[in-house]
Image (cartoon, rainbow, N blue to C red):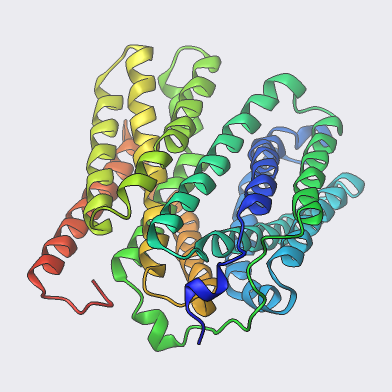
Length: 389
């Protein structure tokens, strides 16, 4: 079995990071564009939640299946394949604007996006030290969330009517493909990836699994329901975009700090600290009325919510050989996807309350904070098995 260092001598993250940056702008724009443009294609607005749900179903299916494709094709070719599938799904939507076609296209898109995430995350995690992994994950998350924020701004510039916005997305995805096509060096050594057995999957760090699950439980509602909640709380529609941008920018801005702290302190304690800070952001957002203070509160909430996933996935892969990192990232993405699907449904159960959305986030953050603190203390006391603490 190869050690991580054996596979990382020529591993360079330039191609996946550049490709991911273009993908993130396109994906961030597309996620908001689709529900806003349904009427323009003669489709009912009631189709929007179904399109979102089937996308996450595709993400789940992809998390279960893409490892085999990556093992067979290698990271670079698999990256090109998944981006091409995403482009094909958009082209199908433009050529055949029917509900059934759009549902099928979004299912395919979810599968493709899962592939992009697993390819990029496993590529970056095949580094020769824990510090290098943390640094690469910080760059990854900053590129992903920064691109998503830029994608949101494109709505104001290009609008949501006609095919031009979709053509813009396609061009961005084509530019993302150029990165692995033109930068042919730096791919991880092509080696047989080993699937994690059920016992090995069960023995992955439980705080890491919970961290990825909670990340989905938080970000699913933040992406899907938070705009509606904010719109009901503010006076002008432009303030909704401002506060949503504050959330995403918070997630981007915190990544360098997480990259610095992750290899230098216990990751369980770090996740506990992040969730505690997020809880402060939730309470502040509820209590303050000034727009500037609300923006700061949402910035803090975004920083805490978006910090969990890179910490958790790094914790899960700390002791794994490079031959099992693809499989481990697949498991982590599956946990995140499950949380993303369940989160909006759970948040809706509190929708009849005045601040139901914030109450849901507070419950998730507080319970996770207590759990991570407990696991951190148990680890210090030596009460848990080294693989499961």
